[in-house]
Length: 147
Image (tube, rainbow, N blue to C red; front, side, top):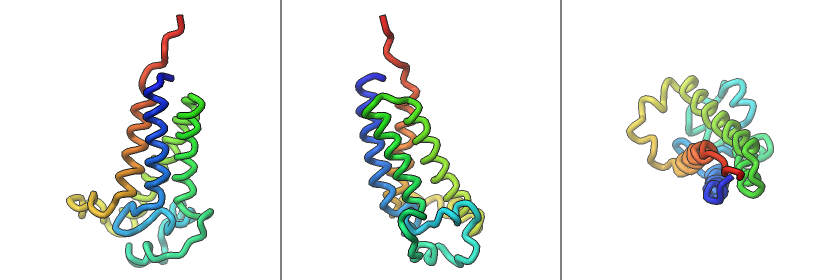
């Protein structure tokens, strides 16, 4: 990989890692979302505020998945592994996309109805999604030519 691709992936990995501890939607942090809820839906949670107030063990939360994606991107930045970068990007986008799909499904298109305020108080979403998209673009840069 090219040197600037390594630097971009390093910054993206750090951004995803930091964003996994911040709010991704209206005060809901990835640490408040159980992995089972991503798989099965939110079921007994009545509102988004109740979802943000849940107490979830760290290793069973969505934050672990996002941190895993960040670690894979950081490994790709350090060792030049495109496979690790792609795997981290796919895992991160999959977790974030599944969360937003479940929220839209359970809370009647909440994201679509409040699109004008979707970027306020959502620093975690901006960092995670921005880092993943920028890492995706960095992975599309062609490799160095070997003479």
